Image 1 (cartoon, helix red, strand yellow):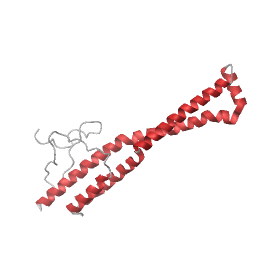
Image 2: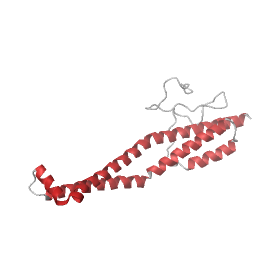
Image 3: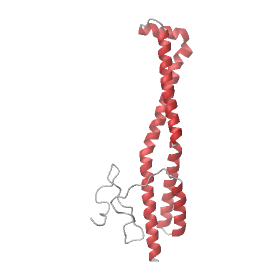
Image 4: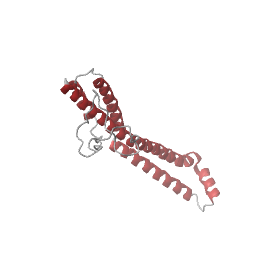
Length: 193
């Protein structure tokens, strides 16, 4: 029974560590993907705006802009608007293709799904509703879906297994220092310090 308890605690530690890696991935990549999508929409809208004036206004629009800006010829108006439309269209296309090439949306969806699955698995393991063998199988099935999420480094040198805990569940080790680190004193100090 003690071996099963140790294996269960080790699996729970691995699940929590992997979830921490997935959550770090999501914190890093969600804003970037949202920014890229927003910039793409703005650039596409600007391209439409730069072509709307000449398309709907025609020659009178070009003459009005020429007179307002004091230009010598209305060809400057056409050329400038076409150049601006070209630049923002190419920029929007590049951003769209970068997002598709990196498959950002699919990666975020897979990471969010894996995070939820790992959370559910941790609950089942914690409350003993699932055997360790079945838990290991499910854990492997879930992490295979997210090969692009890197494991977080160990918080202290030489760590390779969960620290011993008196109860049936060991909390995850403290994360490395950074903007999302817990406040001091929330976790016990690592062994050997």
